[in-house]
Every structure is written in C-alpha cells, then in structure tokens.
Length: 355
Image 1 (spheres, rainbow, N blue to C red):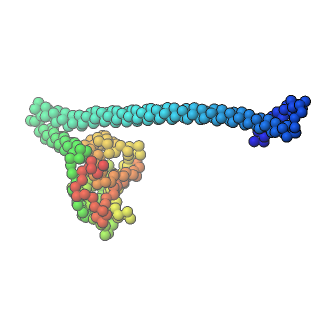
Image 2 (cartoon, rainbow, N blue to C red):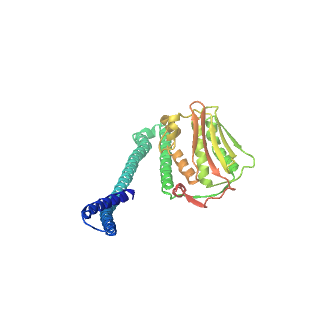
Image 3 (cartoon, rainbow, N blue to C red):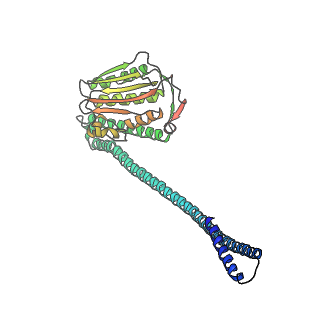
C-alpha cells in the first residue's frame, strides 16, 4: 500500500505540475488553479487505482487458473492413484493365489511321494512273509514234509510268518482307520496304576525271556486320567514291549506316572537299553521306519507300532516325547488330562482332535 500511495502521489504531482504549466500563462484565479490541480490529482489517483485493481484482478485470475489446474492435476493423479491401487491389489491377489497354488502343488507332490514310499514299504513288508511262507511250503511239498528233521521246523516258520502277515495287516487296517478318523476314541476316567499293572503283567513272560526286569512307580494319590482305556493300553503295551526288545540282558524297564502342577499326569516308559542316536529320533513315528532293521525283523515288529501310538496320543490331544542317547537308554513320555481338568468330549476321533 505504501508503494501504491507513492505512485498516486507521484502521478498527481506530475499532472498537477503539468496543469500549472499549462495555465500559468493565462490569467486564471488561484481558486480555479487549485480546483484544476485537485481534479488532476483525482484523475491520476483513479487511473492508478484502476490500473492496480486491473493488475490485481489479472493476478487473481492467474492464481485461480493455476489453482484449478492444480486441482485437476490432483484429481487426475488421485484417479490414476486409485487405478494403480486397484492394479496393485489385483497383482497382490494374483501373487497370493500363485503362492497358494504353489504350496498346494508342493503339498500334493509331497503326498504323492509319501504315497509311493508307503506303497513301496507295504509291498516290501508283505512280500517278505509271503515269500517265506511260499518257499517253506514248496520245500515241504517237494519232499521235506516226510523228512522229520526239518518238517516241523518249516511248519513253525510258516506259522510265524503267517502271524507276522496277520499282524501287519491288522496294523495297516488300524492306522488307516486312525488317519481317516473312522476309529473313534471313547474317553472315560482311568485309574492309571491299575492300567500300568495290567500291562506289566501281560508282558511279564516276554520280559523274563529277555532277562529284563519290569518296574512301576506311580505317585500316591494320583488322579484318574481321561482317555480311551483300550487305546491307552495299546500305547503302553507298545512302548513297554519296545523297551524290552531294545534292551540288554540284565536291563530294566520302568513305567512312571506322576501328577503335574498343570493338572495333567505325565506317563513315561524308561529303559537302560541300547539307546537311539539323536538324528534317528525325529523319524521314529514314521510308518515302517526302523533304527535297526535287522534287529527289528528278528524281533518280529511290523514297523507301525510307534506310528499308531502317535495317532492315538493325538486323539488324546497330546504327543509323544522321546529322550535317548546310545548306550544310556531311552525315555518315551506323554501327558494326559486329569479327571479334575475340563473334560474332553465323550467320543473323539484323531481328525477331530487334530482340528
């Protein structure tokens, strides 16, 4: 505004001076001269104000046009940004779908490899007793039946391989029912010391033959546990039987049970046998996996026992823990819900428990 006043004053002074020069030669009264100067100054002020306003309006128009241009550019960028967001979202969806598809392909590939390996293992396990039965039977038909030195031995071997074949078929059927959820678990309160005593009594003859001593150590006042009596009996029998098989003459096998502060009961089968290498432990529950194949076959195992144990324990919402070292023995343990803890459903399958 100071610049505007200075400009108006300068223009007014110029016009006033010009008017004074023009009227100086004339005999004009002083009042008329002053009036002329005032009018000239007013005209100058008006013209300066008009020019300034016009300039300001032009500047405002330019500013408005620039603002509109920026607004249009912003809208265009926003629209373009929305399109980019949609495109990015679509790309992300395609990427996720691709990853999901890749994972599914990898899963199916793994299942296919697992299926092939399983079929190969089953075929191998079945062929061994079948070929043995066939070979001994042919030998008997070719004349060994009349040879009293070998006929009874051959018949006993046929019977032993037939039992092995029956056990393998039974275990395959059971593990199939466990994995598909067809086999249901009926949960009920179980007196664990009584179950342990029952298992040790059942395996006493096998322990005596292997020169292994069986022990039981259950904490006094142990609460009852929730589980399927028949299936938990199968778990303990399998673990104790393995502890006897993979022990040494003069060894010991102890079944321990104690209550935990968490409201669960820990059950452990501990032996001082040959032990298991650390790198073998993660694969123990795989079907047909054996740490020592020659010894396992000599003992008559099917290679499915620990796999069945794993599925039964999963149905009880627990898992098998293994601690072992070669030459120091092994400990197989799991935890069961006590009756005082919130009960599980009366009937549960392996697939339901896993879900």
